[in-house]
Length: 112
Image 1 (tube, rainbow, N blue to C red):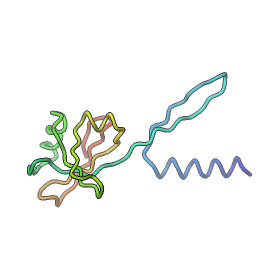
Image 2 (cartoon, rainbow, N blue to C red):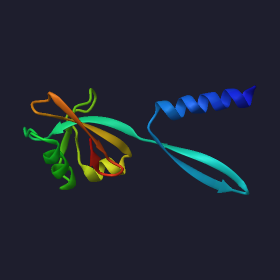
Image 3 (tube, rainbow, N blue to C red):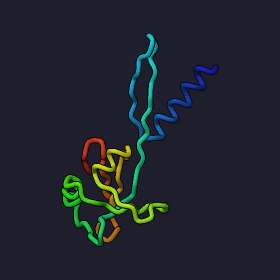
């Protein structure tokens, strides 16, 4: 019964959260380590505004700052280097006067 419950809980976890799975072997036993990634909502920093997704991706690849729009962000800024260092998985980028959203996948530097 415990194995079935563990399997159900693991499936719920895997389907709910964004993660990276790493297999670790130690003393002939295999363990799975999950690295959690989080998502930030940001906009262009310093009063700028994006007009297209292409412009956002160019800005991202130039390692320029984005302003964090989170509740407790205190107007913090994040760039490509910071996002990778702090294990951010995705950036929800607000553009066109904050009316549209583009999503940057930090792990592979793509946008959708």
